[in-house]
Figure 1 (cartoon, rainbow, N blue to C red):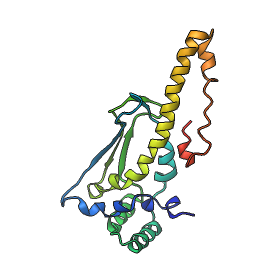
Figure 2: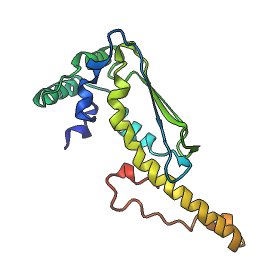
Figure 3: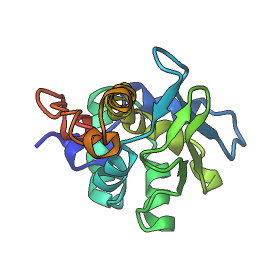
Length: 191
């Protein structure tokens, strides 16, 4: 089994291991957000966060995870914030002191609007939202698949309204998404 499959601390980009050292002394908070900066469409369908939360963030950090991560980062020559992770273990029972706010899954949001925000709820863990950014940004693929499918469904709906006696009944059967085939992961298969 790959280490990141069971250890959240390893589920990040390698350069994130040293970010905690880059915060100015006395930093107590950070606020991060996710938005669609635009592209082909002016609206985005938000989808995929719940799978990430349940599959990766619902499991508390353990001493064994911290030890494994310390060994891993040392082997890669990266500094590791073992003290910060031990603080999470002892002060929060391994639960992440993190507040994630997001629009509801399935919500269509105009581009350039926040889809999700992240912030630490413990001033000693201001580094945590940035550390988890790699994992949480994996929501982009499901969002992309869901957004494209939603826009295609809108076009189908417009043509059904012009050509069909009962468009509302027919619409559910007109978009056959085969997006679960050949994708990189189960999380990628948005619809």
